[in-house]
Length: 324
Image (cartoon, rainbow, N blue to C red; front, side):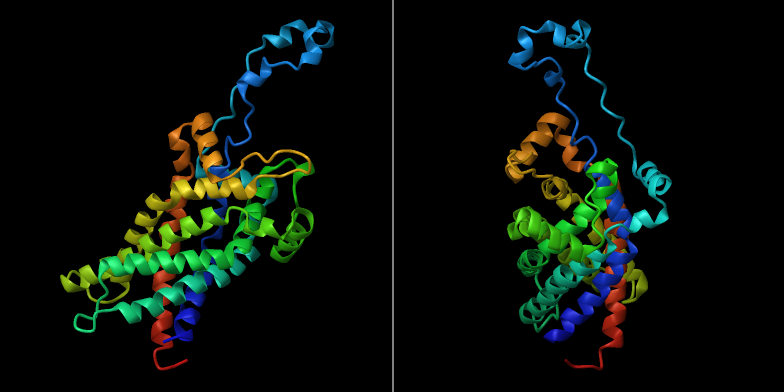
């Protein structure tokens, strides 16, 4: 099928990405909750310059208890706060980056998966073995993520910008402005910041999402539970979205934090890499912090996967008579 698989996958991915963008934005904001909380021990660790100058600071400030962390809020509260602070349009912050990301990343992964699916499908049964599905998903996801990483970094930053104080916001005007400014201010390599995480996450998501959809769809049809129609597509796609969410959320949290970190000249980066970020996150916030934002993740991944595969099936029907 060649190019046709890329076109079909690209159209479906862009539609799915844009329609679920507000849920993705809320997920990113929730994943960043608690990231910049001060270490309580820092309140008591005075610099040596103050050690012999007790008059420089009030006596009672040394023993003041650390301020309590701000309460974590759920996805609905996060969404309401965004709308109240910046308007409904703020829910679509970074949507231009989403379009570019889906154009680069999802078009590539969907097209490559389709090519491998055709080559590895058993001609006698018309189905591809599960192991081959997973392998195809891993390969396609990894390559697609490497291609789309610049748009992914830009999308995360544009989505997270609204949570920063006004004076610290980057205020990108669009995805092109974000990529251009990042290249000039932080170097071209900043566009691939967190790329190892992006690739790992994409491999997990694509393998679990596409393989699960095809496998569950085949099981439904082979057992005669439903006919090959909308009901089958929705059921298989929602189940695939759940599997992908559970498998990818920890990597997604770390990826979001690494991509969003602000590196200032002359200062050490908040995280030296993915492992460092994971360790600091777990140490400061607990293991369950790796599943922070899971509710909006499944709330977004479910509808996204449903829209993706339902649209894909419809696009395939529309283009079945075309060969390119």
